[in-house]
Each structure stands twice: as C-alpha cells, then as structure tokens.
Length: 252
Image 1 (tube, helix red, strand yellow):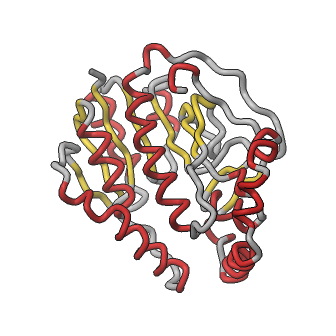
Image 2 (cartoon, rainbow, N blue to C red):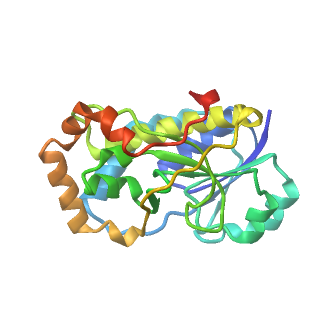
Image 3 (spheres, rainbow, N blue to C red):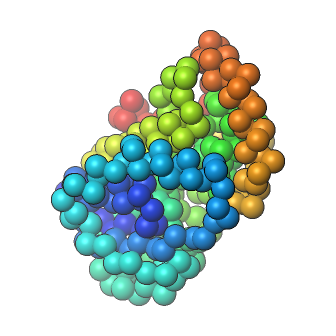
C-alpha cells in the first residue's frame, strides 16, 4: 500500500476527498488550507447548498487523514516536513500554488488533481467556464504530474462526469468531484502499472477566479435555459471526440 500525503483545501468537497482517499490508503498526513474569501452571490450560495446535500454525510466517515489546518497560501512553508516524511506519493487537490523545491523533491510522485481538462482549460473555475462557453464536453478532471506551470504537467489520466438531461451546474460538479475522488483511489492503487501516455495538443486557455463574475454566471444560466445539456447529450459521442482526453487502459 502506498504511503501518501494529501495537500488540499478546507471546504466540504475537500473534506470528502481527503476522508475517502485517506480511508483507502496509508495516509501519513493531510495539510488543509483555509478557504479563500469569495464575493457572496446567489450562485455560490446555491453551490454551497448543493455540496452540503451531496457531500454532507461524508462527515460521518472515519477520518484517517490526520488533518493539519493551515492558513491559505502557507503550504510551501511546510515543505521541509513533507520532504522529511518522504511519502511514496503526494496528492494535491485544491491547495494553493506549489513552489519548485517541493515539486522537485517528489518529481514523478506528485499528483495534481485538477478540475478541468488540460490542456484545453487551465487555472481556476475551468468547468464553470466550459459551461459559460456552452461546451459541456470540456467539463472534466485531469490527473497531472505536478509542474511549475499552472496545470501544465504531463497528463496521467482524465475523466468526464456522468451528466443527466435535467442536471444543474452544481449537480454536474458534485458528481465530477465524486468521480475524481474514486478515480484517484484507483490511480493510487494502480500506480506501478500506469503507462506514460501520449499528450494532447490543442487550444489552451488559463482562467483566474476573477473571470467567474456575475456576467459569466448569467450567461451560464441562459445556456442551461436553452437546453444546452440535452443538446449536448444528443450528440455527446461526436462532441467528445472533437476534444479527446487521456485515459489509462488499466483504469478503463
């Protein structure tokens, strides 16, 4: 069994991720960075409610992640301790930017769990931006080797979410996080059997959290109102094929 350290955030979705992944593996320690303050909005309140409904029961899971809560942006201050622990793998989901010394110490053993399909969409709120653009085919999650660039590391594996015709954006997001968490567990289990994969080429866009403003929210809502999701599902195979993803054979 691989010994792991998890670097993550402190919102409910991060709590679910660390409890599930740590429960299935030998977790030595988890660093949980505090929540980044965001402007209050109906969209974010609806997301919080949806995540509470979806992930709330995860609080009942036995916590074997050994969480250590730290202020946002201080993860690199703890690099010496992480390096000294020398886990087999470091797993990052939702932490702040990692500095080169920690990346170099675990090169080839540092997994970046990115909610977005690299190289097409990088940075923050990428799946939200895919829905704003009317492209549900670009919603997904990528497992990357951690790199100095923003979500630019070598792709290990990618997934798309299960989507239903009457889904809200938050339901799609929650189901994707669940799928990403379960896939991460399988990826750790199969780590020694994974293969180097051909990498993708194509247009790339890096988003910042400030790009997810009120105007973008309204555009996304209008896309849902004109049946963006049913239209995508009616032509899903062809639309997905236009934006290929990397998939390990051993993970299916």
